[in-house]
Image 1 (cartoon, rainbow, N blue to C red):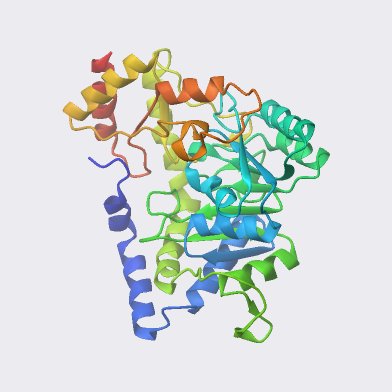
Image 2 (cartoon, one colour):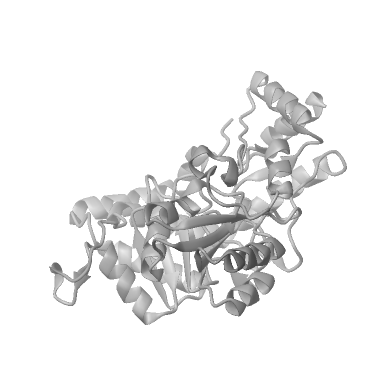
Length: 375
């Protein structure tokens, strides 16, 4: 049994994927082939965005967003305390200060009330300049953008939507990736839309941001091309073979994989209701369940369950064992009195079970039985 069964997905999509890879090999256009532009257009259409710029990975996409916004020394970037380090790693790289916010106890996303408290605290202290907000759709569950966007507007802060885990999800009828001045996603193989290596993309409706992203991606190229360097950039491109792999995967995600993820989650929810805290999805929202996470009664129960699953050969993961504010690299960042009560509680109790659109109901029942045996 696989935690995320990429082999089963490949088996289902093998003819299309193989044909697309062969077409790239036959053309020998390994960098910047037509499949890259085709994918960018389809991704833009899927999110309702004017522009999509593909790049080498999701972390690069975040770094590009920070660079486009001019984040640097003396700036404060606000982000949820529950995420992967790449959401705020560029802030440290560019000399800015990540300011973490507590999570919503139901969705585990960025808490709007904590966000505004932290912005006010930074302004009151007067040492840092609030620069941007990063809203992470954690575990594939969309943030409360109706609350977060007005806060960003109130304080004049551009919003970056970190949709690395949420491509295919939606908030009040709008697809994830469609929020913020810039949005990013990741095509790491385990993501809901993943390639066979690394890949990422940036989304925007702003023409100038689009031009700047495309320039930075290719060593700061100018109007004259890659040898007309007008700024310091980076080398971040999505390989043509990865685009070729993603095209049939995108079609499958849109046609049936998101629905199948709902079916798998519904079976888990039915089995675990009343025994654990099951994932909460707000009304008129669609979670893509990048991971299916439960909350145990306490850390001791979580650890017993994880140990039992390991003994039973059932794959499982913890997303995430440590809140960002407690990571060694961030321990000296200012917290402004925030206790991160909900983030700490989440990390102590969370565990995730196998989740993918090709999970056989019989195998899923084995997972369910093993978890229930543990309690």
